[in-house]
Image (cartoon, rainbow, N blue to C red; front, side, top):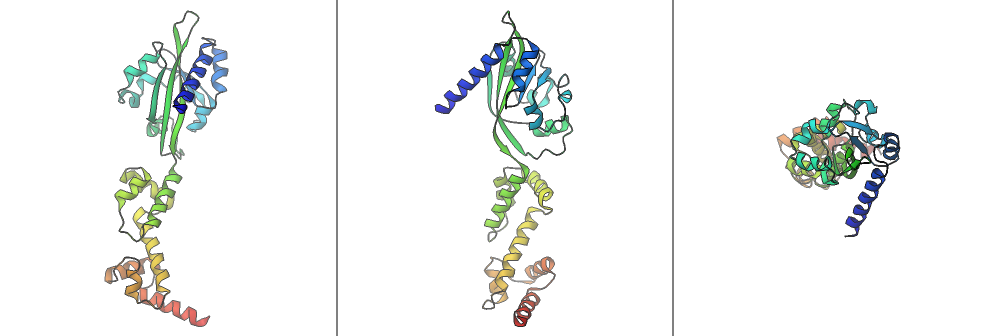
Length: 265
């Protein structure tokens, strides 16, 4: 209840701030520029007429000229297919309208503004639309106020997946579970993981597992088969080949080199 009351107060406070300037474009521009949250203002036909610096920085857009006068809310396919046009229209008829926990269509934004280095995989926002009235109390503009609730950045997502793989290396590799931890589809997860690590998730998992087997091979009290078994991998011709592909040596040759190194010490 406390959080909701706080948000209602914030919405009312911002709404009053917008209403107090009516349609004075210069004052309205100063108001939105001073807010630490992304804001975009639309004319009645849905065309963007103003954005603040916070919004430009949020999506790494280089200039307001890429948006102002060119983007139209009602022509956005992501909005059209969302099924929320009727609710959106209410703001253009004088209501304050709130959309909660909306997943931002980042792919569409990146394509629209030719953004190639947006290191964000998913953003969820609360979006509040405020009508701005003229002196006769007719709607002149609509301002969209955006508050990020959850942000999933590419590197953070991959670090989370790597941590999961490293914590479950004794278990069989499971792409479904790993992608779920990352919160991505399997295809997107594999692509993003390789982009950030240079490896597929499975290769990363196998490399980590082989490192653990190498550690076990240091223990001469264990046979090679027992060293593999301790890492939940059967020792056979197939797994011996995998080990050699990863290290350049067979398990027995690797252990022999280790013993020679220890003897020299």
